[in-house]
Figure 1 (cartoon, rainbow, N blue to C red):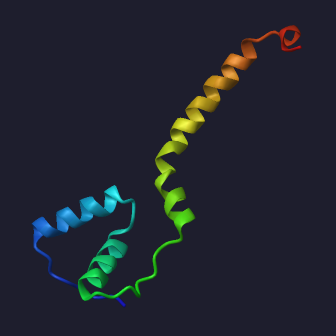
Figure 2: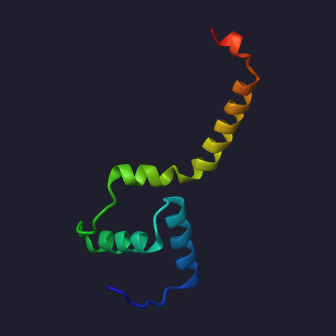
Length: 83
């Protein structure tokens, strides 16, 4: 359900920053916070593997960079040296 809320700026900025640290959308962070406050456990959580995979997104560029470096290094090895 969509709704509009007025949240003090300081709380909004803290919530947005914490959601970013946890790599979850702000709406999910706020839903979980409200559910905790209400003592409910009914808010569906993301599957553990999706949470893990989502938190590794920032490594894609680094992985690509390392792959390029390795490919460059292997190009320098003479084929006779491989055996």
